Image (cartoon, rainbow, N blue to C red; front, side, top):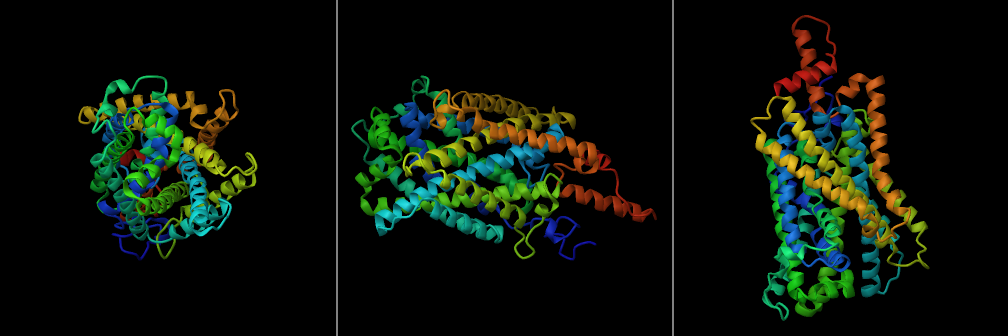
Length: 530
């Protein structure tokens, strides 16, 4: 029976619990939601010093600008695809529409594994930092996993609220942490070290040596988040315009902000001393420099905002995973119960609950095995955060490369290659660059996760993505053999429901018995329309 809710809010006649609520997010809300995933303060305080220290590459600011250009190229085709496909499954939906439903099924499980790993990994860093703050300021000693599990519960609770409420929470936290980093950047520009306002970090010659490939992997992971904009397409007002706009704004802001902030770090220490300082201070570099130039109070606030910024990233990634799970449940790639939303908030309740359970299980597993050595307090950071973070980054890089190919195939099959030529060339160039970054990531994975060259982790951790790919591929093949109607709908999302409704209406108008048109015919008809 058709839903009684207005058509402007519910985009499927299957009922309110089978659709995400439309018109919940505009450009500001969506932009803040996707930028929160990049956790700017976490990148400036954690990723940048680590890349300087481990890789010895001074030209990190230039690297961020180069990566920004590569990801802008990727966004050209990706954004154009977003005008034609509105699906909470984003990556896997695009890949399904370009490379076929089976490829889409494989991509769905890779996306689920990658984004889950990225989110869960942050709990390690979050728990470590919160326990440290409590010990420093309140003299309360607790294990890292206690605040980590409390954060799991709080994130899970917030994710059940309306997405526009989530956007407001993310927006407030993001704006404050960005403001503090900008203050630090301004102080570094106003009072640089002995070398003055040196532009040495932007010299191409600084991007030479064996550490460049690894630095590239670290830096591309910092951009993770901008590609999530299409996940919210079904919940935005004017998705054809808003999603595309937000992706380019997110890429541009991230590239400029991170390039400026990493340059500020080189100015605060001097380009010649940045590597040595990062090796000595590690993730404490930003806080040590802030203490020196801006005082104790500012540094204390920075520590607190470092934690709230991570919380914002946790909530942002949780929302993305929940929507992937919802889309997969709606299309038969997961049990149908996951493809339903909360009757009160419209949030993907089943997907949120699943991600909460996954987070609890993984955090508990690392807590129970935290014995390296004698409960080393850095273990959750060096293991849970580093291992899962790099697994997730590898998965997202591969998904972006596959999406670039899918964009090309999608428009070529529609006979639009000529009209979209420059976008297809941009997608091809971005895809090649992303595959190169993925190759570097796999080749030097032992450096990224801090393992020895012969350590089993070097193949066990990337194997998580491979296993997810094989599970998804198997799921797609089984659906094609046993449930061809379900298989044909992979990637269609609400379009499948709308096409079914149209078919029923057409048959009723002809005086026939309402029935279902063959899904393969529906999909081809939809492709012709587009």
